[in-house]
Every structure is written in structure tokens, then in C-alpha cells.
Amino acid sequence: MREPHNLARGEVLLGIDGRGRRLCVTLGVLAELEAAFDVGALSELAERLAQLTASDLIVVIAALTAGGGEPMSSAEIAAARIDPKAAAAAVGEAFRIAFADEA
Picture 1 (cartoon, rainbow, N blue to C red):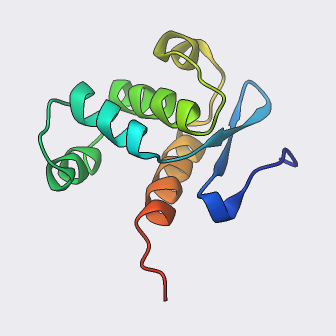
Picture 2 (cartoon, one colour):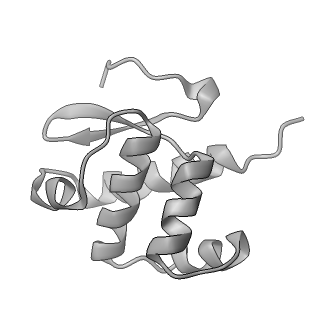
């Protein structure tokens, strides 16, 4: 995928319907996911994200597309062509980048 993205900002690309979409963890994304998964702390969210179901992955990708500036609804994500393995890897990479310790 050659679509522009800003790795320094924490953007990761995921192929959705044959097009690279930017995923990015933002404070708004974290708040949205806390509410969606009914958790009260980032540590609880991390535990919840460690055991995602397919429907959870759809919710997370929808939130991350908004963080990346190209929002898609959960319904749009559910109907899209997305490789599940690539989706899980991209979501993991987005969170890894967001919470990486900088030297």
C-alpha cells in the first residue's frame, strides 16, 4: 500500500476494500473504546483488547479509522473486504506505536 500516512504520528495502514486506510490511536479513540467496552481505566481497556472477538475488532477498527482521519462506521467495516490477520496485526501495531516508550 502506497497511500500516504504519518508513522511519526502513529498512523498504520490497513487495506480496506483494496485501499489503504489510516488507523491511529488518539485520546478520543481511547475514550470511545473505554465507553464501547464499558471499562473505567486504560489498564482495563488493555486487558479487554487482549481478548478481542471479531465483532470487537470491527468496533476497534471503526474507532481507529476515525483517529486516522478517515472515519468509517462499524457497519461499513463489517461489510468491507478486510483480511482478518492483517486487521489484527494493524490494530496491534497501532497500539504498540501509541504506547511505545521513546528513548
